[in-house]
Image 1 (cartoon, helix red, strand yellow):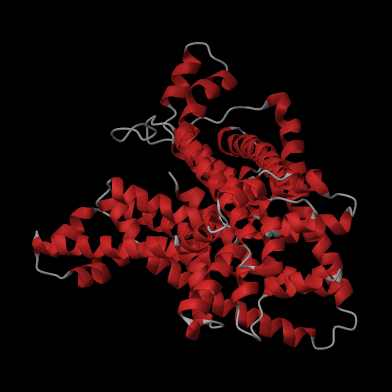
Image 2 (cartoon, rainbow, N blue to C red):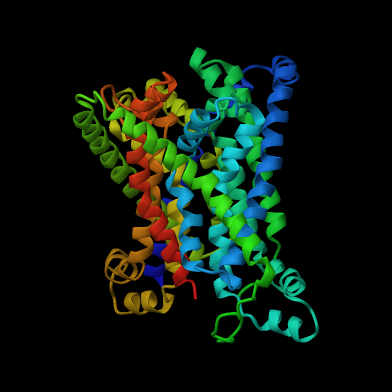
Length: 508
């Protein structure tokens, strides 16, 4: 018992230290914002431009989040609960947009329809890029739900749609609210899409302010407003999720729900899903392919440059993934084995920094390095710390899923036999959660490979990545030169689609 308590204390200390690291950008941003003084702060925040930024940001969230929830839920229900032809193919195609970085989709739409800018373009691209964040958890949960309640409703005379609305949708609340939260947080932190679409939000305004001078308190004031919006999103997600129980007691039916015949609705369903896939996947892929073919003429040393940039991207992705997974392990273990108010607070803390733009995290780390740790400035280590802060939630979610399926009795048995905490972790826990560890590594590595703003600020001189090279060429309107980097990022992201598809299929 004493050894177990010691292990728990060590995990708690490690989780607290990691949580402290994730809030480090806030400890820099908030004091800078408060240094402006009350009168100056009030006058700045009450400016018409700040009001427009708030209106733009709120409008984008208010339109995109419901749109992704509706599209993601409807697509998941069609694929998992209806007699949709080639459902497995549609499942893969609806996840595939996750393999296309959002700012690459924006690049594609800008080149196809140059006039598609402003709010309309931003809402369209973000909706098409982010609806899989809702489709994924909804589809996975639909495969696990006991069909008993739905069948009971049908036996009492309710139609397929009515039975779904009354019995299935309420139990989808955790999946839908979680997906909506991910979409909202991505929108609050999005920069590349909005800059390409020339739609000003707090994120683009912060980038502009920090480009002038990152010590300017006005940038920190804007970041503080963005943080407030993040906190609001977290609160709303908690309320929307509710406390209704989803899991069943006992073995339950242990069978899949009977698929609903679509009948005359088969053609409209196929048209809907086909249009969604065409807009979210076919347009970006076709556009990148077209510009890629043009870039082959007179490429010169492009192949060597592309390989070099890809190598540096893979190296940073591997380091960032390992750092995030190792940092997430103590908190994930506590959430599964020693859940309490403290562990819940630590979990929510990890989401705060992930909602901040990468530029804020990057510049906060620049400030810390310049003021108190100059030797780490312009080093790979500082870049890796930024990745760990930004993408810790991805690793946390994966590890929690693995630990939930790992019987705690095996750990207790190992400790009762005198095996130390470290040995138990390496011999018992890690082998059991190895698939989840691998999932977390892949998810974080893929996120790192397409990260833009923090890398731009923190990467050592001479270090280049695919995202930076793509953005540099696209910003110069050299779309042909940007295409190879876009194609490589898409190719590296393909494992994400395969990994997430397997995750849905394994949820039984």
